[in-house]
Length: 123
Ligand code: FES
Image 1: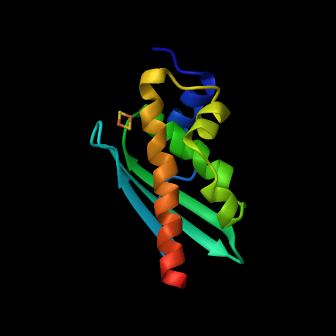
Image 2: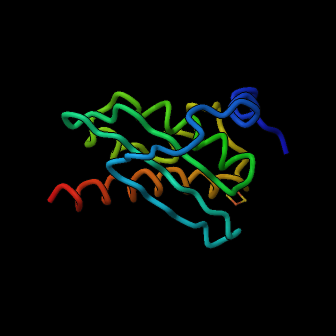
């Protein structure tokens, strides 16, 4: 199995790891295939994701995709963040081995869960 340089970079030096204490939305999701879990925190101001952090108990691909996903949605609107697909994240990483594609779903789902949490708190 071959990982791209970008995947290795984001795995070795993941961006935005951690927790936002006063997060506006928190999403936690699990991957049914492997049992890995991910928690995503978002801070929203004027409909913009001003901060995003994540924690994962997951594999290298899960870490790399979450790291890339947080970079891609930071500074974007809530609507733009909702449109981010795991495919787009994998492409931004120059691809993932096919057997690891399911890992990238975790990041997309965690972002959606965090935004749903934010929306329900706002409503
Ligand atoms: Fe579980 Fe990759 S093997 S997320």
